Image (cartoon, rainbow, N blue to C red; front, side, top):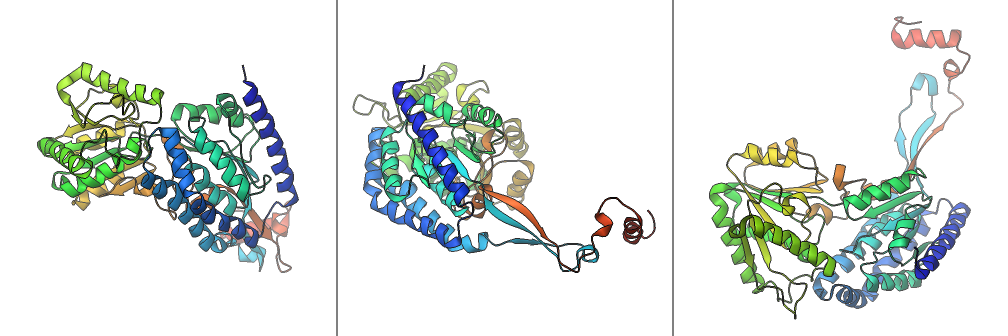
Length: 480
């Protein structure tokens, strides 16, 4: 049964949707100047609210590093808006296409990128500001109007987004609706012109089913068990540090983070030692260090992470290696980094995206095993390889499919304002960031302008002698 608060939120959603629809029909194609002015508001908004954003994240997580908030939920978004504004004039240009000169003479054909209209955005809880305001950049660049439904798991951030965006944009341009699960379920049933959802694959399928009822196009940014490969020459302290920099971002709660690693069998002990060395030298006790990005978001997610660990210990306690102290009353949602060595295929850490500070470590003898392992799973958001052997890097790249691919780094494909970001298969569909994001939220309308010197009679029904002569000409007399 829908709660009274969600009933109110749903009513407001419909009011806002109708308001934005009317505004779109009144101004269906905003000018470059209008779009630039809207984009120009975002960097100042982010900087002015930076400390409030950090505080709201800390409230929702129980603990959230201030610097992590500034890097990923403030500066990243501001830079994305500046990049789009700098390139928008070029993005909006017509994409000219060739025409057959004998028929069309000096006629023109081109693709023009129209706004789609009113777009819905359902960001995930792990980067609740970045995923709300980041895609808003390309949505506004494409000339659209936007309604954002923040995750119910980050209520403090949701309230702040409503205030920030409400103070920065008119309701008919950008609006935020906050509410619980009933609002979230209802949100995807509206007749959007496009819908973006970021979250897990199971909910993504539900979103897509709802959207299909209204033939709403969707962009789905989902999860992925992102594999990270080390070749023997690349098992070094620097590379392990870079890998952990991805794995431990937001305490592992990142869709493009390293999910599990594959290392040569004869480098296993060296790899484990380097992981321990890097973590202990960088932060000391991982479970209590203030340098760690954040706590596990809530008790439900903590129970899930703990369930994965309990399952791994039941299967092979000796294969579970903790780096850091145990969770405590003072740190109830902080756990050590835990390596799970060669877990069984049926283990929970092998069946699900980890999304926490657990790192499964698989060993291999031949590189063929790496490719077989990756090909046997769903296509992930990212595949990462650390190697100084270009032939193996190229072999892995050409033998696999994923949303992104990084060499001697991990997760970097999602950090570039100028590089389209998204998944494939179970890890999602569609792209945002940069020009690809602008195109994702645009309607590429094909236009033909027929000139006076065109001779298109052969194409016009009924087809007679003119069509016959044209067919003979283009086929060299083989037809007609």
